[in-house]
Amino acid sequence: MMITKCSECSIKLFMTCLFGKNTEGLNGGDFDKIFTEYIDLSGIGETKEYDLLWSIHNIQSRVTFIAAMIDLQKKFFKEFDMPFVNAFDDFRSYGHRLKWNPEKPEEFLNQLRMIEVREKKFQAELDAKVVELQKLKKEGVTADSNGRADFVRQLNSLGKAGFRIDKDKTDMEELALMIRDQNQIVKDQIKAG
Image (cartoon, rainbow, N blue to C red):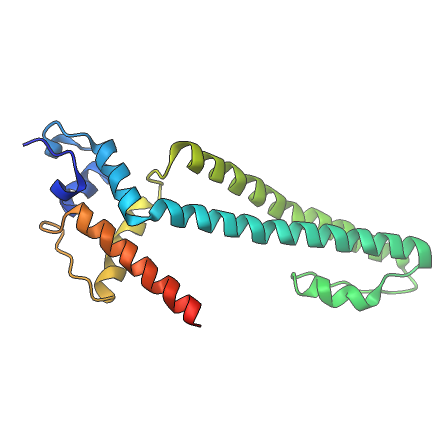
């Protein structure tokens, strides 16, 4: 029997193919086709894209805000020979503590430069997320280095949520629909507050 659909592939066989890189159990079947069907049915691709878009938005907001606040401080300092102290709390909310000593004004400018240096990691993270999103849109969802652990955690979460899973008997179509249902339940709970 040639296994070519999610409904024909057990969770155990799927894990062997995906994480063990052993597709012999498929008896000549096409694992890529099964994997794609699983991703489509479960909605995982949509969830990953949404998570990436959300991360990109949050990081972009931070990068833009901090850059604008540093620019404001520099212009204010240049104009008034002192910082805009009321905006120090805005920096604090992003983990930066500014101090003003009128006797050492150059120290304040050094603090701003240090913030710029520390914030470069967020720009690098943003760039990486954009590349990851582009790759996801081009190639679709693929297994990653944490894939097995994430997959097992997902099975455990579904079990705790009341879904009955037997790795030998439950097929990948059933699992994909369980994942979609659980994700919808969570979305509904979030909307309900």
